[in-house]
Structure formats: structure tokens, C-alpha cells
Amino acid sequence: MEKPVTLRNQIEELMLLKNYKILSKKKINDSIEFYNAENKYFTINGNFNIKRNKKTSWWIVKQKNKYKSLIIQYCIFGKDSFKNQIIFYDKKVIDTASSKFYSVKKDDNFLKIYFHSPASNKDNFESAFFTWRLIHDRKIVKEQSVRLKNSNGNYYTTIDLEETNADEVGGFFTEVTKRKPEKNKLSAGINTIYIFNEAIK
Image 1 (cartoon, rainbow, N blue to C red):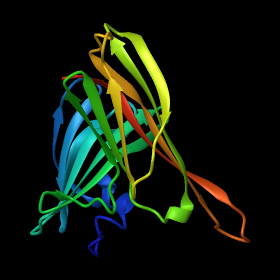
Image 2 (tube, rainbow, N blue to C red):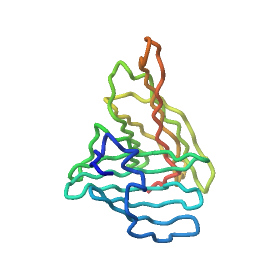
Image 3 (cartoon, helix red, strand yellow):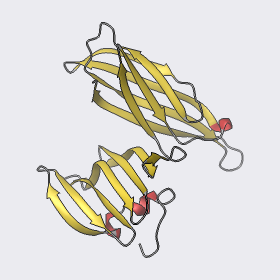
Image 4 (cartoon, rainbow, N blue to C red):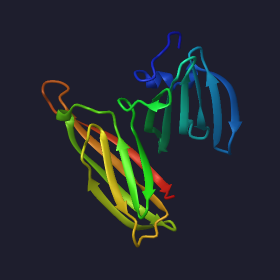
């Protein structure tokens, strides 16, 4: 990258390893290596699946001499790599205007699950759902799909843990938007965030 890219507007260019000098590679296991690299403007590090030739898990990009950074959670599905969570930081504060992420918190006998996606025009919003499952000892003990209310890109739901003895939660959030790209024809956009059997603590 001869010219500096911006964190928010040029993610694909920013994440290309060919744009960096690899400083080190540390073997994690037979499939994963931890990369550490830099160029004139940024540093980058994260796990790389050498057998699948794809990024996996969390990658961190930091802008040199500034307080801005970006973390991306990569998930591999078959031959494709999916950006599950994308979080921009400015002085350690999340830039919610551009980020998509989730959080899970246990409060007494309830799970509070929060999703955030970049806010879009209210006229474009169609619907949002969260399909979840509670797991105990690797077996599904409870599952449900719920419709979520959009509050400027924020979504929230509560799951009752009573009588489930669950130790993990998994599922996926889906936000559907509609837009008019050309010739007044409507098309749908889908934003998805996965929860991969996260431990309930």
C-alpha cells in the first residue's frame, strides 16, 4: 500500500497480507500459524490456517502513531472465509457507526444477548431474527427462533436458563434490509452474526 488506506472504507485492501512485510510466524499447531506483520502505516497480526490458506479467528490491525484499530473475527465455511464480527476502535472506544458484533452476559438465571450492526436508514430495515440453542454436555437442551426489534442497529434478547443446566449457547443472528439499487427494483441485503457454542460463565 503506497498510500494509506482508511480503517473503515478499505477493509479488503487493509487485510491483504501481500501488502505487509511478515515479521514473524509462530506455529500454534499443525494447521495454524500466528502471523505478525507491518507496513509503513499499519501493524497486523492473527491466526492463519496454512492448510486452508485462510485467515481464522481474531485478527488485529493497528494504525501506527494513532489510536485507531480494527479487529475482525474470521470463520471458515468450506472454501469460504466469513467476517463474523468487525469492530472498529478509536481510543479504545467502539465506533458503533461501522461495527458489527455481539456480547453475551449471564445475569442470575438469564442470558442477556446483545447484537449490534451498523445503523441503516429505517426505511431499509425489513426484519431481524435470532435462532439460538442451549447446550449441555454437547447435547441441545433447548432451542428457539425469536424476532428482534431494531433500535438503530441495536438488538437485544433474554434467554431463560431455568431447568436447562446449559453450559453453552450457540446460534445465529440475521438482519434483513431492502434497497432499490437500479430501475426501482427491490433487492435484499442480509447481515449475519454467528455465536459458535460459547461457554456460559
